[in-house]
Length: 325
Image 1: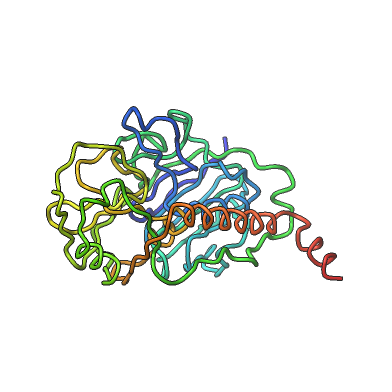
Image 2: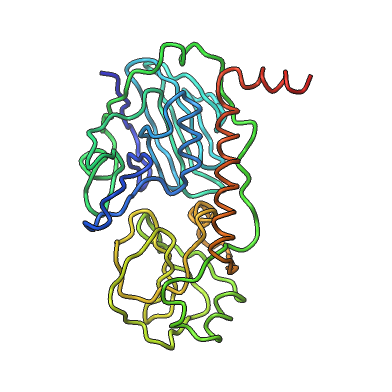
């Protein structure tokens, strides 16, 4: 079977796909990518289905080699990529041959990177997904981070993938600037006007206390007039919990499925990747929107992403040229 061998692994490197759904009631959150668009683009660049598994890494990539020719692509942010010391571009497909070493350096403008191989990573599915849930030890490769010496099985790519023209992302998914948009959380009423003013008017700093489960924000301390202890209720990716310390905690892909702290707000899905990719030390602000506005923003982004993905298909450039003639 085809495989890729990890020679060097950066932190929090794991196998991820779009995540497992339907198990929240059993205490298992979806896991999946921290930046879904980057995962989908990486897979499309190498001719995979969007649901195929790949490698996600945090901050720094690593070194890899393969036993048979494969197509690969790296997305997520700006990063140095070399094959046997020769620089190649990110957000584009390339061929890696047996005996060559792929090296991925440190991301310079993002936190989470994605490495896709043609055929996809074929670790054993658990509960319908290959995503690694590190906190629970589920999925991926033995439910753990990848380490040097690991060999990941790969599927067989379509025959035309290796011989096809290079695919290059020429139409990036726009990542808006400005405040991170939020909707009211289920315990929004626990926070008085003063707390809301601090939350919406003052900046927060993305702290170094972050992983796939959550990230803590530094800044104004938020006090819940209605108390910081509640009967545990459900959480979603993007829930902003406020414990007694007053420091907001944003729950991410591997969140716990219930929580006993009041949740002042929920990050709008459209801005979750932007927050996940914000570098440690970055300043962020929040802006309140309605649920309807958040849904409209998500629909617009989904349509844009589909256009971007379609632009990566073979013949898309020719079709676009024909449309301009």
